[in-house]
Amino acid sequence: MELIETCLLDSSLMPFLQAAGYSNYLLEGRERLTIELYDSEKLRHQNSSGFLLFVKPMSQNAFRKALMDSKVNAISLDDTNVRLVRREILNLLRIHRKPLEILLNSSSSLTISNSIGWGRKWIDTMFFSSCATTISEIWSPLVKMNYLVVHGATEVEALSWVFHSPRRFILLAHSNTS
Amino acid sequence: MLIQTLLDLVFFAWLLTLSVLILRRRAVKAPSPRLLTSKTKRYIVFRVLSQGQVSQRDLDVALKGAIEQFMGSMWVALSSPRVVFFDQELREGIISTNRQGYKVVIASMHRLKRIGNQEVLVLPTKTTGSLKRAKRMIGLR
Image (cartoon, rainbow over all chains, first blue to last red; front, side, top):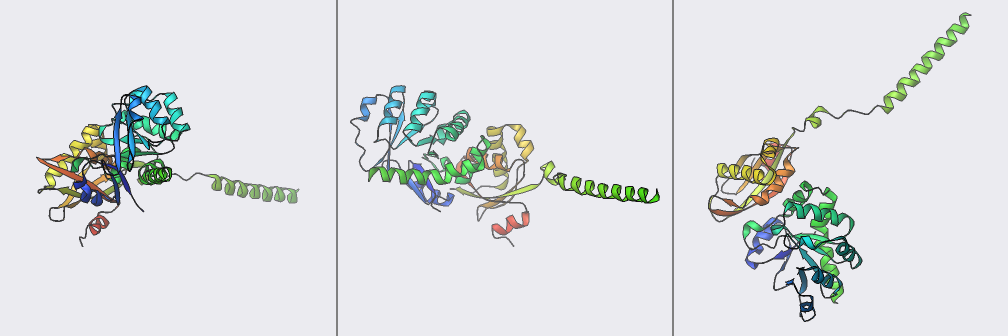
């Protein structure tokens, strides 16, 4: 089965990803493009052709705009913007079936355990990314799974978020662009 | 009179047999004491990716530090992790822990970023219940 790491910041880490068990990856700047969105107007002028567009919203308004924009492939979440997630945002996430990416290296245990709760009830496609710049920042799939289980996810949920969701996200993204 | 008593006795014996059979079928089997204590050993086979050499002792200290940093000293005691074997050539090894704590040990591996002054990546590959099988997995014996 193809196992995908949804975020890699340095292509020289590819051999280490393969050793960890991944068969594919999304490299920042080549397959994916992440923008930090403070001003929702910036999204209108953003050219993302050829990339999967990941938006990290930094304000409530930007969050709402990113959720409703069809150009945006996924929303990135970590400790810096997790406070923006409210019930209204979760409703929008569910209505627009927007995939949610959790950045593991910059998320605390509170963010992880909150996201597990959201993933159960509100979010259709959720996945966890390493976004590694160095070898030690890579998360092996088994470590990801056990990390989620320790934070309260069931093994079935962890398996789905680590193994199946990245593939489902890529299929969904490609079906939207074609 | 005698026939009546005999019939009563037969009827009583029949009812007793039925009751015993029904109660035996409904009885919930208690789990084995081995599972209740959760002290069953688990062995985690792992690989280390690093630039330089890593020693078994440094790895053991770093692993315990990583678990303590992530889950606290209580889980270091509960999971009682120990690097029982490490091959410096193959860079593969075995961690001994228990059923209660093996998930915590694996989850804590993301905190194990440095050993000494070099960056490392510790990759768990398999978990098994016997040391013999764990050794076989890394090609020993």
